[in-house]
Structure formats: structure tokens, C-alpha cells
Image (tube, rainbow, N blue to C red; front, top):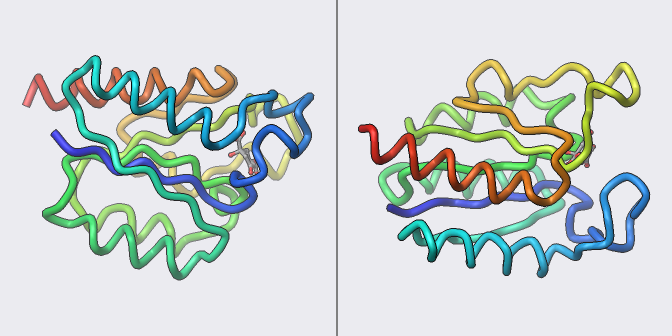
Length: 145
Ligand code: DQA
């Protein structure tokens, strides 16, 4: 099975950006971790990050028929973007929402997610291990199909 792993705005700055909140791992470390887990699970993973919402929407549209699941950390677009939510239902595959930090323990504006209502699962507060958990959940969901 093919998994599209998407990271939204500012996540290219992982390791540099607020390490007390997001940890020391870089985005490259996250991708390496995900690739290791994916190969263990017999999944292929395609990992992308963008700071441009339109580019993210285009990638999600193009995922239709090309990927069997989407794992996404939508970053701040989680809390702002109806367009992202609308796009994520188009490929018609399971979506797992990942947040490195526990968004519910942070500012009020991070407690609302436009994505959670269409997600098969939501993982928050597990650090970058959340991506690993998301891929394990994807493998389970696709095996059960
Ligand atoms: C985040 C949480 C969001 O609130 C924030 O805007 C991010 C990262 C996380 O991974 O914890 O950019 O999605």
C-alpha cells in the first residue's frame, strides 16, 4: 500500500523551531523514521512538506487513485482551513491527523481542528513518534479492508 505523508507550514523548521515544544528531531529525521516504519510494515511512503496552502491542496487532489492513505500534520492550517478539510475528503482514503505537540494542552485556538471531523484517527502529544503510530494505524486499517 502507498501512503502520502504530508507536513504543512513551518514543519520544515523542525529541530530549530521551538524545540521545547516540538523536540530536536528535524524534518529529515521524521521522514527517515517514517520510511523505516513503512518498510517494516510493507508500506511505501511518499513524504512532502510545503508552506504554500494551494500546493498542499494540489497534492491532495492528485492523491486520488495514487495513494491508499494520507498521514498529515497540517500545522497551523489545522485550525484555520476549511479548504484543507474539503480537499482531504476528495481522495476518498483514510486520513490520519498527526500533531507533535498536545494541541489540547496549548492555546485555546489550537483546540479546534477543521481536519479531525473527517479523520480516521487523530494523534497528538506523542512527539515525532506520532508519525510512527499513524503509519501503524494505516497498516492496520488497510489490512482490515
Ligand atoms: C502542530 C500544532 C499546530 O498547532 C501548530 O500550528 C503546528 C504544529 C504540531 O505538530 O504539534 O505548526 O501541528
